[in-house]
Image (tube, rainbow, N blue to C red; front, side, top):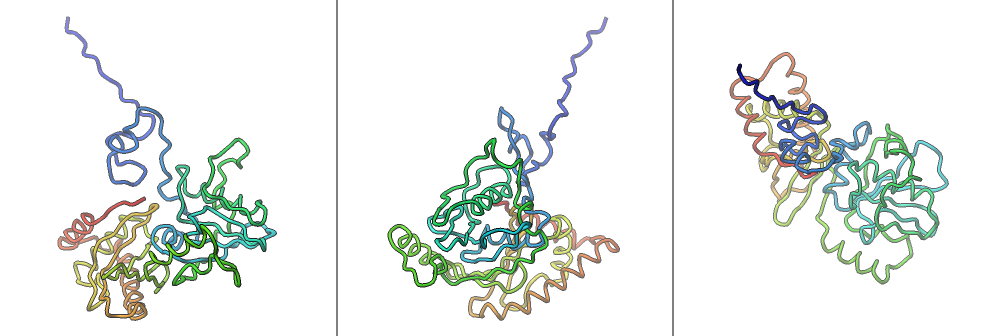
Length: 313
């Protein structure tokens, strides 16, 4: 009688270990968050989805050095709240003596969902006393609102148009001079800042040492955006004109951020019109995808674009 061979049944609960990790890293699940022996809470791949200002918020969190924007809340509050890139000593939030509050974007992440961390900092800022500082977002507790997210507290339809600053002097209320650790933190921050200008929606000109770049957070799904960019690349239309070169792109919080190298001799404002025109070409290319799939040269261009991607968050 033939021996029946044992068949190992694969556990179908959770992600397939051979499939891409849901965190968006591009690695297989078993080589990323599936490599732990214990249960792992996967990072939310697109934590700011659903907000009209999603692209701008990703830019503020990842690479814009000094910027602020007033927040519109879902419910009336007793104080004004301003969202900022970096606060003194990288604090998560603070309340000034006049009762106005600041919430920082570029802070340590404590949970698997950036949106939940931001919500806890905002909730603290709405309830804290004047003069208080939150150095870091604390862990969720039994008293924390159940899975409260940033989207629950702010007006999701608010169009985010940040004010980009040349330094961090806005840290201090008008007429007040920095002292102690704040003064030292301000000096260091100003010394390290990279000149940055917003030249369009979620599009930022950045001077990084002896090179200049355009970093542009795009809202489209990654695969569709790559197809449209490949179409433009094959037609020689992916640049911003003379003095520009497409450099690659990175992923941040579920969105692609294409990057172009730019001629540093030209002023940031000179790239605003070329960027707008490139945006129009991208819109046309995106609209053409359903009616006209990529041809051979365009498919090869797509493969080249995929090879020039990295994930930072």
